[in-house]
Length: 321
Image (cartoon, rainbow, N blue to C red; front, side):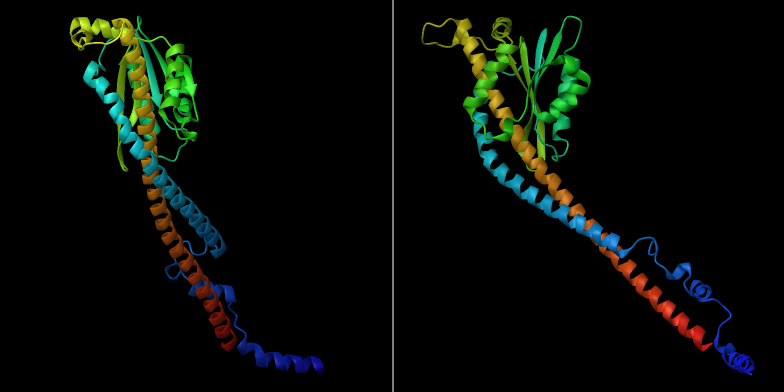
């Protein structure tokens, strides 16, 4: 009797039970045209974590831009004032970048840190081009490298040609006395006919000009003056008992230290300007990425809510028959 009663009760509930599985109903209702692209392949937690990471990176890039702007203002005035040191030498000796000599020393001035665009790569490329141009069977070209980034690039294929490497120059603010001592050390440890200083001349925050300054040895200055390519010092009145060779030696050393001082400051200005520009671009890119991630997050969250609503409606429809 009990089994017969259960069979009768079961027949009463048969119409309420749908023969079609709920999963089949949900898949028929949730077609591809109703689901946003990629909504089911990513979770909201992953997108939220990614958004948090991008926001942190954006804060760092904005802070780095502000620091670079502060450093640039401090260095720019010094760089502009230092241009008056070497310009009289250009008026006195002229500039002879195309002079053909046997011993060339290429002084490459770069930065120790990165995240400043292609400023270091540009200086290194020009240095390599000058080295290749002044290489030959009877010629000798060597490098004097100032800056960690230039050292890292030149060591790969020109390690045997590097005479001196100096890093962490711009760790502390430099003055002329420190640079003159550095210039004296370079002159004592290298043999040269021409020193070719390659650096980036600061023009504005968004632009810099790769520049090469040439400093000739005293012997070569005398030879070029005799041929008429450079101005002869005999036309000037010199006080004191120094000979012309001694005067040229002192002038050459002073010229090299002045050019080095200006090159280091100009390179530092260009570095900070390029870093400002790079960090500004990075901050804008982070903002655009945040907008895209916010859109993806909202789509994913909306797709999840829509899916839950469809499941609830499907279940209710299945129970109602």
